[in-house]
Image (cartoon, rainbow, N blue to C red; front, side):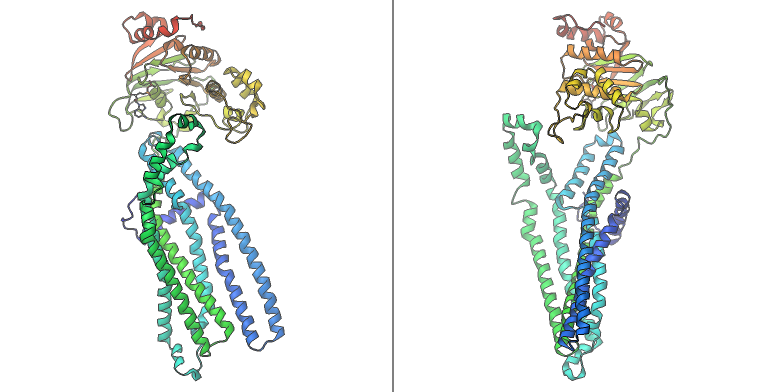
Length: 629
Ligand code: ADP
């Protein structure tokens, strides 16, 4: 985060919040309308009561005419009821909008995360920035929420000042009668000007003190960041179902508590010290200034009434109106101060939202071909991960033959997954080109290009959603196709046993009767999802790594049948799983060191393939392979 000591100008405060205003309006239309309406109604409605009460008291203390008192009383009751109703209704509307606002604001960040270059998502700095933004929000609402909240305060302050000014003007203009002697000094313009200045100064003092307290609070954000992260990381450890076993087995709560007490839940933290020190002192001074102001108002109004400038009813009106004027000035000044302290947090937000999206700018649409004649070729491709000095891939030349099976094999760390990541444009190569039907894949519209691939990643993720929705990636889907995909993926028997078939909720996060599936079953669902997508390319990137080699070989061989006319790519560090493929590419230290069919590769006794095959043979020789390929 930009340091608080950086100069924050009024111009920047307005500019950055103007940008936030436009973003909020885009993501949550109506958010400002309702807050302005509520702020204005909340500010103005007390004045109606103040005004009418003053009229009633003046009448009671004066002529006591029933024909005047009656309508005034009815008007006071009716307007009070109506305004309470309107303000209450607006408050409800605003509360509902607030829930929508919080959700939409998160959508803005999620959209950015999803549209960002994958290489940036992978960067620690990106996650650091995003978690800073999230922490500032949860910690004290800084960021978009704080702006929205203060926008209402600005509306409330302005409306309140206007309303109070209307009711207050006569306090200064109504003269004290000449019979009041020395008190006629109260009529002098110079005195009135001085008094207005003194009142304005005292009124501003309270919020200015509060703003200093807020500045100190914002400054603590930077110091509290690590503690907050520790709290987020460790504070909810005991609630995490997946960690239950490890925590019990290794007493991990002791480490968690140690860090929590050291860094986070700590009476000597910077925040705790600031609360006992400057934050507390400034807040107390602010309250003190407000008390002095109230005293001054009472003094002036009562002296003027005593000197005969107006009746007793007007005393309530003026005290009420001047107090409200001061309060609303305070609201406005405080809102401006809060917006100023919100600037560094908004800078963080825009630093994140302005991370350029450079990769996915291609506009070419891919040809829609029912014959699946999509040919992808790696031409002398080399790639290093951002920040890494070693090549993860070096001079890779590979052409996928349409409708054929290709295996990518090699030891762990040889570059197999990186190869797939480049194919899916999660990264772009630093050297060489990847071509689709002869055109660099960077030129294609990213969504169009991705539609050509179904990948089952090693660490695939399913959602706590109905089974069918998981397979189809949508709420509305073709049930027959989803069922077929599950059956093809080997999930048929389990599907028949599912309590609600395709509508069975997976996992228990959102449904008590949700079904927990085993790792192997989850894999089958993930494969079914890839089949449902029905893309021309289907890629299995060792989703079976947790299985034993024989089970993996079975799944891969079965998959060979169901891949049909698609171009299939199999990745594995276990050679036996892929020996049925038309072509096998052997990766070693980021390079393709051998290519060919199984027998052909094995014939080269000195080659990497034969070396790996013999090293792994012990796993497969004990029992005859159940898979004949
Ligand atoms: P394989 O899939 O064959 O096990 P990978 O493609 O995952 O191998 O990794 C190839 C090389 O790239 C390895 O040296 C690995 O350490 C490195 N690597 C993988 N992912 C990253 C990453 N996100 N950042 C930096 N280096 C990485």
